[in-house]
Length: 454
Ligand SMILES: [Fe+2]
Ligand SMILES: [Fe+2]
Image (cartoon, rainbow, N blue to C red):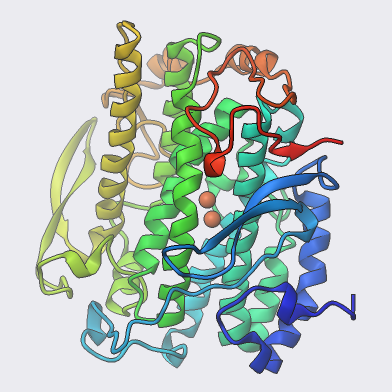
């Protein structure tokens, strides 16, 4: 290991060669990361060449390179979006001050927690998806899975960079802990609920990419507004990669083809959407208010909003429970930031569902997919204690027990979907439950050998 030239191995725009202390921390962490990747990363195919994109710069015109690489040799790089000269803290109590290049001492613990929570999701999803290679519907899909996996690995690198570069020994300890928690493990689970669920089949994978990676988009977008400039720049670049993950999800579900009926698809939507809605946290949250007031985590598209960016007086409409009814209520804007971000997220989710419905309609099928009501099957927030139907009625335990099988995937549904998951690894061939992709990756032809099996 000592002979590896890390400056060469780790593509970066953070001047790694000049920062000996950081370089040493990353040199120390890198073999542990690779060990984690071997143990918990994609099962099988590790020795195969995969046609992957690698981030090599932050140039909007050409930040990625495509080529064959064995996954353990992937060049996980560290990239921050270009600095904006004169950037300021754009919200909260420090509005108008120069953006911080170093961690403000009084926010050290809070900021570290925010970074660790985001960072923890990245390896978690790789762990959740590690068995999917076995049942890939095509080489195209297999490659997309691995692309998502290596990029989540890079996102972990991005967060570890922040921890190592800005949080000293605490940061290095957190970097190690990120490799030690395990998705779904009882003793050392990942931090957030959705990242401890299973991703047992490819329908679940597409749904995860559609709903849960999209939560990632909204979390990253609000962290991209951070007054802590390195975090902002890191997240801005991560968002460019995230777009592909959601594309994999949306087109994956959109290609559903005869094999899986729409009622089952709807159940998977209900499950993955509700699990992902929980990731936004409680409707009313003093934590969210504090993150904002401190200037650490903004709103989605904060700087495009036309208000005072302090939110001390305003209100926001949130959904709440009043007895056995779901009502809307005006809450102080500051404590409602989770709900506001969830609103942005739901609107975005709905746009893709509309596109799926267009596809369904264009096949002359009379069926409309929909998002479940936001109170459906929630484990966090105002609706955690009640049972709610997908159309948003508070129902009794008895009615839930009688009907939840209509709304959520059952063991039989999972077994049926599982039975369809027969691997197809012939170039250009696609499993019979899904349509071929509309176009290849990076303009490649339909029968392209995305993963070299020889
Ligand atoms: Fe990610
Ligand atoms: Fe992602």
